[in-house]
Length: 177
Image (cartoon, rainbow, N blue to C red; front, side, top):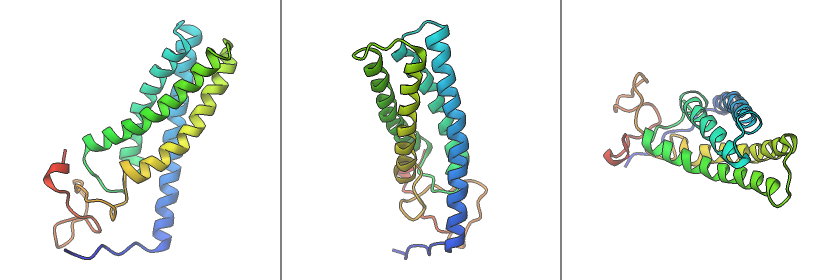
């Protein structure tokens, strides 16, 4: 068993964190606009129920977000296989979708609010809370640091003398996609 790869210098980790947060913010902003825009179109214009509108809007925004986060926000992190990443991403997003749907459902039904503005405020509040949950979940479980889990090497990356990208251990065959 080999020793873990040394950690990059602090200034490199800082730059990666800034890149990660910046990209996460851009991808999140685009997904936010998709979620809010589609929710409004589905609820206020298409006549769908508030809960159905929220489910559909979030499902579309989530799919766009996965691609953006995998290939940009967290592109410097370990790859554990597309299927596993998408499954964990979906579970985290399913939890935050449930949070958003429950928020809308409580505001709409027990509180009997029908105003698109009130429902949109509840929607935005649930998105803010969900964003924090998603960022922490993605970092910990979907796109972990290279030292935390075995990873599947990505094509085109520099390869060390041992055959693996620097600082990344190869994944066992069961973890590849």
